[in-house]
Length: 390
Ligand SMILES: C[S@@+](CC[C@H](N)C(=O)[O-])C[C@H]1O[C@@H](n2cnc3c(N)ncnc32)[C@H](O)[C@@H]1O
Image (cartoon, rainbow, N blue to C red):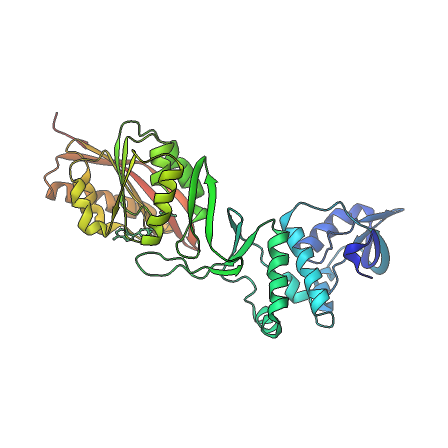
């Protein structure tokens, strides 16, 4: 019987004492053994839980050390209310696709190796690099026809309520931080979406967008920059420049960017957000272009990973002689954060002195944006430079 289309179906089930039902439910769910498409059922003092199709016997090893008895049986279950949990929808979709196309194969491992994370950029769902890349999936996808592949990508896209599908490849180590997104379903990578009230648009197959920096974009846009002149040295598609011009109310943002694909997105968003009078785009290498703004800025935003150290001297000189703010992004080992902060302030003081700025340079805040890798944090140091001359 095709379980997913009927109102009730006969399924492998596990029975346990009612009072142990929650424990067993959690355990099965955690190990991806439960079929959330069917409703668990009470019979007297026993709870019956529906098991996923295609589970292999080894997966039941997790039941070995339970303190209560569980019994395997075959039961008729009723269909659960369709869950709007995308993880459950994706599991159901992939299960259905596998059963239609590869009924005779061992499917349990494939189902548990389905994607567990993704990003959404407008209607484009972006899967991580490891999605469908396990050796089991690679082997299976190799045998698939074009039509089967297309139906898999369509089923994933629909389960996640998207319109197109892409898979991220690692961000290129080139200076542009180019995106290497592979389009799996759809005929172009242009995306448009709203981020904290600001419109963004760009070709996701050409440029990166780090959704992980969401909290930082919100934080920067919440800082009042009313009347300020701001430099954004690595503007990209406007991740921070747009928020500073629109939400922080900066008077003028000088956005420096060298990648023509990013600039295309930035120009589109400047127009879409009505910011033509507030953002000036400087196309080219900021090493050459930042001197244009020496002595004019109240604030410099330096948002490149792993480090922006090479423009710290320029940033000091871009600030007005009276001083101003620096926001310095950096990848730092968690254990070294305090040292890094003190060394950075010291280096900035030396640079300021070398450029004849009589400034006090301090920081009251270091933002931990996200984990970049297991022991490395992406941090932003907010630095205030104040002239000692009256
Ligand atoms: C990491 S992206 C910006 C990402 C964004 N800050 C975020 O967190 O999502 C960095 C941008 O800096 C640009 N870039 C790198 N080196 C540059 C340089 N020397 N001059 C101008 N732009 C540069 C790259 O093209 C890229 O668009």
